[in-house]
Length: 339
Ligand code: NAD
Ligand code: UD1
Image 1 (cartoon, rainbow, N blue to C red):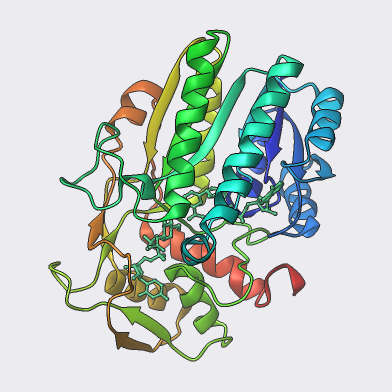
Image 2: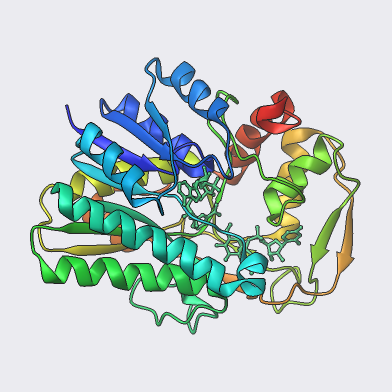
């Protein structure tokens, strides 16, 4: 049975991926600082999967701590989710974001090399494309991130690619997520943002449970059919399954770096998401129409053909399922893991 180390495994996407990995038979060890998550997520993962992952509370920037965990766990591969992900925070503190995201990954890669662990799956983002020239966006599209967060993702992609190029015993999958939403259908794990949610779906869920009065709807004058921005929302369990197949593919990928878009290839507008969420929750979900949010692109959705043809993976869950499962989580945990 293969063993994997999951950095950031207590977080939103990491915890869902842990469930998928455990159910696929992997031994799973989580390394997480719990800076943006709770150990309760690991309890819930254990409850769903019937097996408990090991949890080490440590920071990826702490070389000695990472070394200790790596030496004890001796993983066959690392899935690297750990990092900071707020666009506005990264604009306010770019150096902090480079030090954290790029710095921690440099430490992690160095420790992997010294321990002979040379397979990595990295959480990148569609944000590396910035404002796209054509839609849907293929992996070959130009990369020009519009904010420091996106730049850290691109720098890490390049760093990983350089490491693989220097030593063909390495292999890597760089996964560019579009807009991950939803939750495990059990409602036991889900997204639990600190403070005011910056993203659409968690904000709507907090309106639905009564934590916030109405959604600020940013931009109603985009050149789109209903005037609101279009995005490629993907169910987090589809995303988790994408990690599993990308990981398995690394076994036969020595010396290679694979870059994949993980999206559905379908676009939904903000108004469509609100309507789907109303249907799922039975709440009216009032909103206030505001100016566009700085830095938002009008439309962004994936060309997911490469992952389908090379990995046999495609996202199957609908927007209605994303809303239903997100609501199962939020309605059972109105205050997130503190509920
Ligand atoms: P999250 O904040 O829920 O999870 C990240 C986890 O990493 C948290 O548990 C946090 O405590 C941990 N962490 C952060 N810095 C750490 C460090 N230095 N050492 C150890 N642990 C650390 O975020 P998420 O939404 O699950 O995102 C996971 C990854 O996917 C991130 O790298 C993010 O940039 C990327 N991503 C997320 C989205 C999205 O919409 N959620 C989209 C594209 C890419
Ligand atoms: C944002 C980040 C992106 C990151 C992604 C992770 C920005 C500019 N981009 O993408 O880098 O990878 O999150 O999930 O921050 N909206 C509202 N009201 C809200 C929140 C959002 O109307 O309260 C709108 C936005 O204007 C956008 C759409 O909903 O049109 C989706 O927003 P969001 O969920 O934040 O995702 P992205 O902007 O695509």
